[in-house]
Image (cartoon, rainbow, N blue to C red; front, side):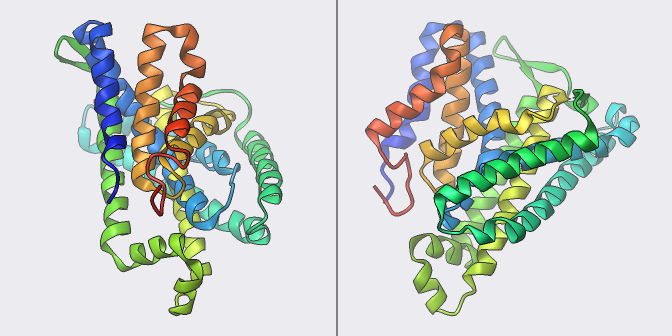
Length: 322
C-alpha cells in the first residue's frame, strides 16, 4: 500500500499559501500552478517511464520537446483561418491536428534515436549521459537549420484566448484546457498501466526484467515501445507549452529539462503517479514563490527537491516501495 503522507503535500501547500495572499490571487495562482504542473507532467511522464523502466538517462528528451513545439508551429501556420475562427469546432480540429502531429513526429524521432543511439549504451550510465547530451546538441542544431534561430509566434485557438471570472479572479481559458488535457492523459496512462495486460508487463519489467523475459515476453520490443511513447508525450507537452508561451525558440526543450528532471526525481523513478504529483508540486511552488518572493523563485523548485529527498530519498512514490 502506498503511503498516505505524500498525497497530503498538495493540499498542505495550497492551504499554507492561502493566508499569505488575497483570495482572488490565491485562486489565480493555484489554477496557474495546476496548469503549469499538467504541462510539466506531459513532458516528464515519458522520461519517468524511460528512466524507471529502461534505466536510461536520456538528456536528449529535451530535443523531443523542442521538436513537438516546432511541428505544432508548422501545422498551425497553414491553418490560421481555423485558429482565428470563432467556431470552436474549427479551433478544436486545428489544435487536435497540431497536437497529433507533434506526438507522431516526436514518437517517430524517438524510434530512430533509440535504434541508432540508445540501443548501444544500455546499462552504461556515463556513456548515456555523454551521448544523449550530444544528441540534444545535434537535435537543437538540426532544428535551427530547418526553422532558423528567430522566435516563431504560435497563436492559441480563438476559443482558448481570453479569460473568465472565478471567485473574483481572472482565469485564463487556456490554462483550464491544459488542466483538462493533463488529467485526461494521466487517466489514460493510469488505466493502461494498471488495467491492461501491456501495463502489467511494463510494471513487471520495472520490478524484474529477467522474470518477464523468462515468461516469454520480448522485453526489448517493450522497451522500444516505451521509448517511443515517452518521446511522443514529450512532443505533445512541448506543443502545449509553446502555445501557452505563444512563442517557440530552439532553446525551449533545454530550458524545460531542469524542471522535467526535478519532477521525475521528486516523484520517484518509474512512477507515473509520483510524476503527476511531483509536477503539480513544482507548478504550485513556482507560482506561489514567484508571487510571494520573486527573488527566491529561481531556486524554489531545487529547494523543494532537496527537502523531499531529505524526507524520502527515493522520491515520493518510488516503484517497489520505500
